[in-house]
Length: 453
Length: 89
Image (cartoon, rainbow over all chains, first blue to last red; front, side):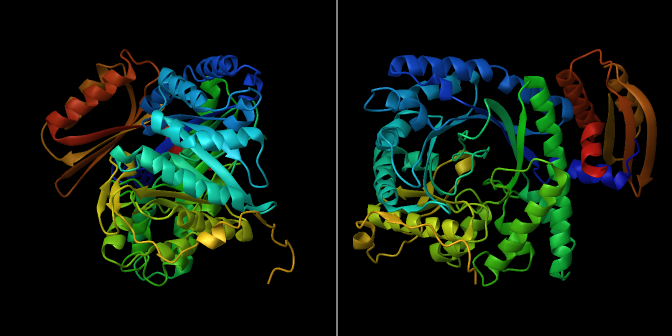
């Protein structure tokens, strides 16, 4: 097969200078058959099953990366929400289950394992209650385990009891990990409309509707999209959208190649490809800079929401054309500390939490990696969660909150989490009280699904 | 198993000799070569067969890296399947 020099060069530059990578190969593993009346027996089954299925995950990922010359950054595991598995036991705390998951993650060599989770959009079971209560200690004592709680859905409405509780859970977790600036909170996501096949952490879990075991691949490449737009100064938005779509198509095709190869070598069915523009703190790997490339001085300028809407939609369209199984979150993430362009916008005073909230109406997830003052009341965090959940529920999309109330820090202080989590300024949060609102509890009913005006 | 090797850098004596020597020493069969000089920049694109390597891929990559460093050029080896996935439907 003959390729033009331009095609070859385009691909090489994507890898060499634009930081295109397979962000994660995530193996989803069902643990439903690991339930047992004995907690200890259940944990043994969980450990054995994860280690058996994922034994070769890391080595196969590395081999594919080497052979094809494609960077594959992370190998990860997602499991059935642990509340569903552990509640068959009479255990009163699931912290021991988190330790088992952590041990399995170490044994298989993956850097994160998601699924210390509960789905409580409509109500709690006994296991859901125990799991959520266990989260602060479980995440403080483990390294690689990620937790998520789904508190709302378009079909079920918003579980305000869970929204209230998660505000306190986030605070407690920050307190328990105070020595690392509340870093534990980076491993906890509160969702509305969570998806069952998301390969990205910290929100990955293997949904109850998934099969026994599956390979999902998440790919990223904000730098590639930004570069594609660099030659389009003054071009109309039709051209911008078309260019993003074409570029998303190309990189998703590359992801599909890796996913199919991983699936074949591991003898595990291929699930989905998730093309999500997931920034890292590295220069050239920023979603904010794509929006700037469209003509905004910085993110936060009026027009930011429209720019993000275009980006998110065009990425989805290109991805959907490129693979027959697109899933997960597929779109653009807008975390703050993980994106140097977002950090710069916050520092300049041009990007507020309120503008970010508006942008989450059209991004692929929600308020992500945002450091807030350590003395933010739990009910205020719950208020943020409730607002995000409402946006997700009404707009039929996934939304999430991953905020870090940094112990001892005030708005404007600089917090450094290190590595892929980056660092940034602590953002001010409204000091108006949400306490009486959040303390009501109960459920906000599911929205009407017709009369859409 | 076909791959594309690209070599880009400032022109000097011995680039082709150095690169092809590194390839042949690793069992890489060269199928075609196209090479130009644009201003003073050397650009070469080779189609190669890496199906019968005499060394493992890690060693091949390391040799190309070392050779590139010595010659002051950037050598990239990319699997044909990747290009096919991206540029052909």
